[in-house]
Length: 192
Length: 192
DNA sequence: ATTATTTCAGAATGAATGTTCCAGAAAACG
DNA sequence: CGTTTTCTGGAACATTCATTCTGAAATAAT
Image 1 (cartoon, each protein chain N blue to C red):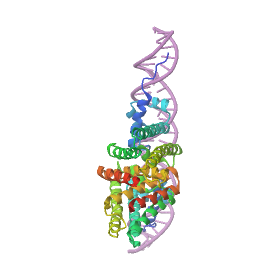
Image 2: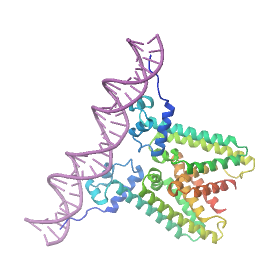
Image 3: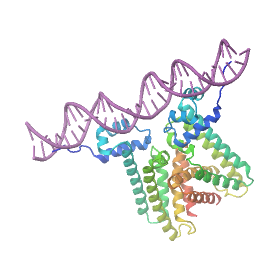
Image 4: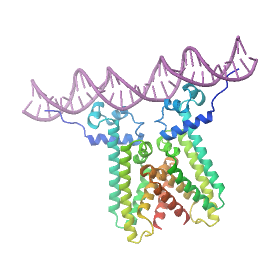
């Protein structure tokens, strides 16, 4: 019988994901991937297909993890407004602490306009995250923590689009306090 | 005597800028530039230097034009709050109407973390635009159109970072109404 | 041990890349 | 006209790229 696979595909995928995440799609070469994944060229092509397929799997995995984090944060807290606050603060912290710009945002601006598959992944993911926030906002409105006059979908999109703003500000200014300040004001804007 | 230059460097630069703007830096090849600028390879290298120098000139020209637009919009209106509103609505319209994502935002996410010169251009430009908004906010506060409690610099950054959010939302959803809605809410957030 | 399959290192391929270079045509002015 | 410079098309060059292929070593079950 045959020799069995000796590496963990998911584990190697994570290394690829981190590399794409850091460098972007185009700037990452197959040689970079061979070096970073510690895998043979042939093994990569056998297991994941070509560079583009590999990237899609990485992006999908990133998006799934991200969504899961939001879902968990939404569940973990009693007060819906507190949950929103927690999510916003968490987003600001990720911006500051992760050494590299959100893979979703980066990929959106690099590829979403020319790569239909990338666009679909990002659109679905954004929609899911917006949806989580929308439900929280509805709950917050019922609990009278957020003005009922506001459209929940609109607010949810506002929050998510502000996260992209966090990344851009931090990319340009490298100023952690500035991002925290923005996050605080975002929460204030939602409340009233 | 010598033959004089038969093309207008600034006019050709504009074509290069539009191409970089649409495709991004890495995805634009010298061959693309030769085709689009309608110029010989040698002429491009003679006049603008290599690809990277050409890109920097394009980005600088884009950034300068953008800043000028903001300055004009800030001057043209009597009421400072109306000027801010105008600028925000204008940003939303640009997002919707221009066929391509803001060159500054795109370049930021593609290059700002690895290209010091790009980073400097974008940082300076952002600072200038934030500064224009900051002055408007100060005036609006004196005219009692905006709460004096808020830090003008913080609000100015909030506005600019929301513009990036506009681009991201439109990139993902292609929904003009959504962006307009976001712009309206942004203005509301500033006022109170 | 034999056989089947996966691993690996790296060569080979073919296309695309940025850049330089060259020869000739075009233009401006004496 | 003759000289000088800039234009052009395109060849040339050296890299780099994604991808495929080769061949041998490693592994696992018969």
